[in-house]
Length: 98
Image (tube, rainbow, N blue to C red; front, side):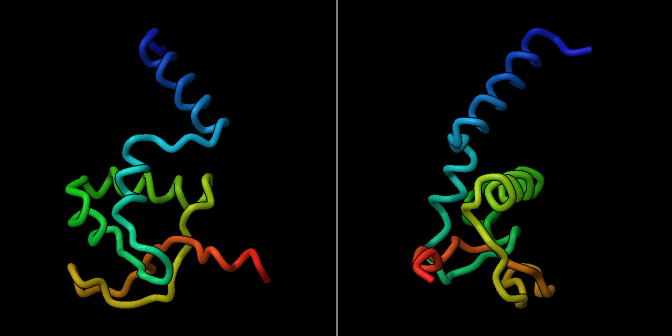
């Protein structure tokens, strides 16, 4: 059962999603990401933004799959964990020219 607040929050999220508006946290993440081709692991984005991994992971997924703002870069080692990761990066602005 949803409370009125939860229903209002869900409606607002859907309206923002439909209108293509970035949320506050999505903006924080996008402002932390340098232009193409620089890429970032989720842990590196956590270090840059001060946000928790679960917050970064969810918003990056939205920015990649729903908003089309990010894409995966080539696999590499994370500078924080040392593990091999598929980092994310801004989409190449010139990609649309081809």
